[in-house]
Length: 68
Image (cartoon, rainbow, N blue to C red; front, side, top):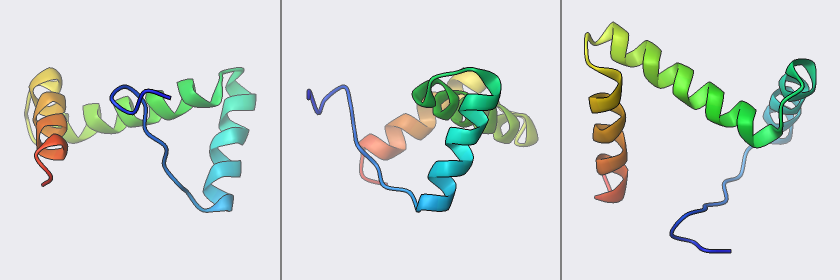
């Protein structure tokens, strides 16, 4: 696996099954559900902070890449 494009994470088993249940309920792949949850969360936080979604998302990515 190319670790520049893909990362593995761990979650507790109950959270895994909850997300998997959402995926099955919405007929989505697990990865698609996780992406949707993340993007929806970013949209909500950006809106609460009165920030542009794209700028806020880029800020989060930059923060992560810089180790912060």
